[in-house]
Length: 201
Ligand code: MN3
Image (cartoon, rainbow, N blue to C red; front, side, top):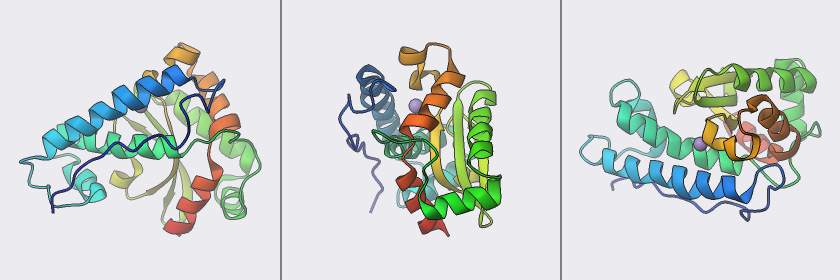
């Protein structure tokens, strides 16, 4: 059966992440940007030869060979993952046990992880993503351009922050570092990260 990319509803109300992320940002980001990636991915999947693959296989197999399909398909995944990776009252240093232990052993503890994650997002030149990912059974911080994600680098995503300007420009204008600090201190859904880590381990 042919794969169909879909646009899930946000897992919270549009105003649920305010004041850290406004309803206006989420309306544009989900209803316009994410919706456009879904529509384009479905258009570009038709005739690609990858119609019968699943979402992750389409992403991996189009990487490097079909950039239009790759970027849109990966952005469908990335945005669903990003929106699920935020929650009202999230963020901060109180982590679930498995995630806390892995950050301690693999990344030098929470404070270093926080600083390194923010730095990855700040130093991603142009549009892209900051990731916590699992590779070879160890946590890694990654940054990727445009639609790229950890799957095409042999890693499994654990949580991600979108650093395309459309993710923060309404609320933070050009202040990407401030957006990343607010995101990790107030929005990151560590329970989502814990579940992804458990599933990937
Ligand atoms: Mn985005």
